[in-house]
Length: 145
Image 1 (cartoon, one colour):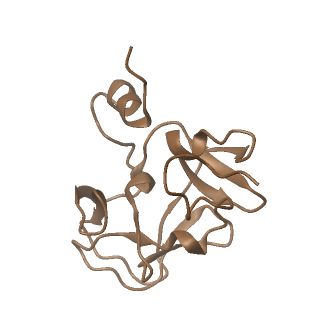
Image 2 (tube, rainbow, N blue to C red; image 1 turned 30 degrees about the horizontal axis):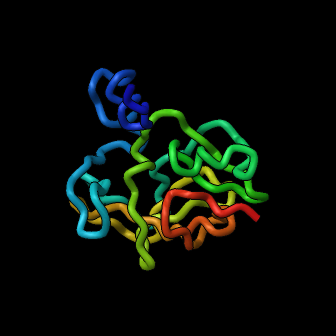
């Protein structure tokens, strides 16, 4: 039996599509940063909101498998905002010089500067309250406190 992944579930539940489009006018393409990246078809103005994230709020330490098997973004207090199916957000790669940021509400994604059509959308993962050890891990094992 094959283990179901967030990507195989997307294929099953999204009629073969790879993700739920949560950022309009964006598309997937090979990235020079990591694997696939999310690119924009249209320009975005600095400080323009691209999307608002949703999901289920859960404790990272209670359900550590979610860190490797689901799509999520970090919330304060070792909490995660988890989504069971892949969305546009899940294809945003890390950059130390990002063109996007997550707002102080931990749900709103906005442009930190003007973004040109065809540019890869990026976030600074280290600017988020990710669980301790997540960014330093060498494998898919979550390092608990």
